[in-house]
Structures are given as C-alpha cells and as structure tokens.
Image (tube, rainbow, N blue to C red; front, top):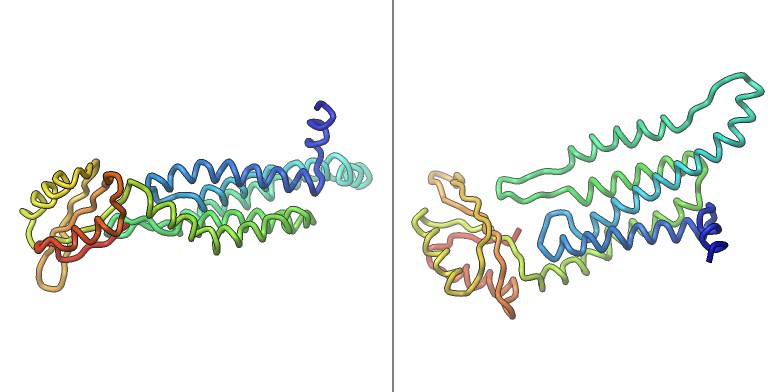
Length: 241
C-alpha cells in the first residue's frame, strides 16, 4: 500500500490521468448537487473548473521539476536566476478577469456565461501546459473538456427536468394577479421560497413580472407546472430560467 501511494505521487501519464479524472469526479459531485437545486453553475461548470484547477496544480509540480533540475543547471552556468512560475501565475490571474466579464445577469434574473468562463479558464491552463511542453496532460484534458461541453448538457437537462426545484419568469396583466398566482401555487402544494418582482417595459405599457423560485410536489414535472401556470388567463408570458 505504501509503495502504491508513493508511486501515485510521481508524474506519469497514468497518475496524471488519475488526478484529472479524480478532480473531474469530485467537481462533478458538487455540481450535481447544485444542478439538482437548479442553480446557475451546475454539473458541467464545476467539473471543468475543478479539472482546470487540477491541471494548474499538476503543471506547478512539473514546473518545480524543471526549475530544480534542467533550469537550475542552466542558471549555475549562466549566472542568471530563472523563475518561470510567475509567468503562469500572471496568466491565471489575468484570465480570471477576462472570464468574469463573460458572466452576465439578464433583466429576467437569468445568469449566463458561466460554462463559457470556466471553459476559458481550462483552456488557458491547457495553453500554459502546452507552452511548457507538458503534452501528455493536454492530451487528457482536451477531449474531456470537449465532452463536458458537447455531450454532458443532455445529462444536465435530464437531471434538471426531474429536479423538484425550478425557477419561473412570469409576466402578468396587472400586479394584483401576483396574489392570484401565489394562491394557485398554494393550492397545488408548491412551495415558493423566493420571489423577485419588477415592472418591465413592453411597447407602450408596463407589464409587471416576477421570478419565482419553486419547490414542486412529487410527480409534478417542470413541463406540467409551466402548462398549468400558462393556462391562467392573467398570465401574459412564462419561461423557465
């Protein structure tokens, strides 16, 4: 067991794969819980961010080996002090500001761009690793990121559709209909644990709107609740966030 644990500390292709997949699995577990509660950052986002962070740590170890071996000998010969770690640190700091600019909150209180921002961070880490010649790690990360972005949304949608939590954006004819809708939710045994009310301009008139955070009763799917709310005569438009 001690020999196995010691072996896993070395940087080989097998241990790199194990570390990245472990980080991906752990991040996915956290994201799975957030997806179940219908939070903006969910399954894919946590997986990509966790894996990108793992890649950064693996690359830091790889850099340390370079500094303590090849670069150390070159520094002794030339008399020049070499510190390559600060360059990758500055790239990661800078990419954080760029990724933050991609996250937007719409007028309907919907957050977008989180998966794009996390993918950008992972891509930046891959670029740092590739620039250092750490090709084995890039070959592992690239297909996993592509799979996370292209294939996993189907799994995420499947989980969200069966989650008891959902958020609805609803526009009414008049503000007084907000109370009628709350009564309707109570009759359906649907828990409303957060409401964000605002008035939104629409052509020449102002339509009151609200975002509802709901917990649905058992055996009631998201599509069923949307259909029931849309059937109310005072509801002008409805959309799930």
